[in-house]
Image (cartoon, rainbow, N blue to C red; front, side):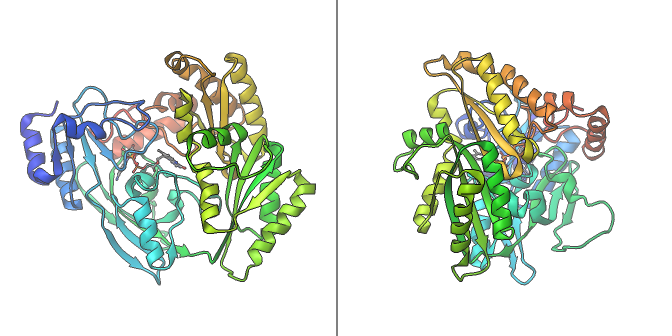
Length: 472
Ligand code: FAD
């Protein structure tokens, strides 16, 4: 536990508005939304400025107080939740939620780290620009959390991961020093590119307090189709066909299995089956372009017509309105949440080369079904990036606790196949607490030791999110 005097000094920095220590008020900060991790903390600190974050870190550094940075608390690997000991403080960025500036000519948006992703998208849209990062959690997750996890989402295929959408960062280091690297430059070869160290580091190397984000031209036409495909291999063939036929205009390409669609239809009021006949697999395909001449619609129609013969597409619907487009996306965006309404769900966030996705899903499905007859695999996700959420729903009528007790066993089976295919066991959600020991066992000793050396150099006292990502 931090000394009472340390907490009093921290409280003096943030004032009563920025300090929470009552159990009922701290509760929402101490549990991850899937309830896999429950922690304890000495206090929740809610600074309102970079200067306050810096002052807090100076005290933490001097007193050796461990700090857990927290954004929107939507992370899925326990990185933002303290351990059970109660000796850590949570540093929440939620009060640092100002849009600092928009430079429409430079195509940049400068924000504080606590701005939600949805608010950043809105600020870009007001300036008639696009900030393309898009996740189902965008109403709650924050830019600082997105960058700290190098978030992916549904538009990676066209615009890249969060890391690729940032030009500059402001970071408070473990000792309280502030690095203001908020430059809006697209070219800057002046030595190590420090921002990339902090992005994807999950709060273990520094606290991101601000960022300069890249903006893009808004598409003037968007076309979305819900397509029935006979197999995963056919889905991948459709991706390549769509890229070629549209001249590189594919923005989203999401795979969904029939069982996932059935879960959504069963549990999300107002959803309807987009196609008349059931298919084992579906793809949500989105094209976008800068032209507003209606040609994109024609391109999509022609593409789907040729896909009937070339990849065996059985049926498809093109959204006729924005409302219908949102309905189709709702199908995809609800796919994660509905699984908990079917009982226990064991998660995998993996990636393999796109050409190996069919092989991966077939082998992993067979292996988990052999280990647990009746298990219901729900593989879905960003197939265009090779990123599949290979989630497993408990057998009908099974005991939830007994099912979840086999989490590690199922992970070992699935991750073993991922490794054989030269894939990654954490494609977009990060490492946090959940996968820390597993990555240590799977990365090379050279890689792990280099990660440790970086951690020791930037956080010599080990106070930034200790015990997450890599054990030092
Ligand atoms: P938090 O959960 O609060 O924190 C995540 C990590 O970042 C923690 O380690 C924390 O310590 C650290 N951190 C947070 N803020 C800072 C900061 N300012 N400085 C330093 N470290 C910080 N993720 C994807 O990549 N793609 C998806 O498609 C996707 N879909 C999702 C859908 C749903 C329904 C949900 C619930 C989650 C989804 N996620 C997805 C996971 C999650 O939303 C992302 O990881 C998101 O980027 C986390 O942002 P956050 O603000 O909630 O961060």
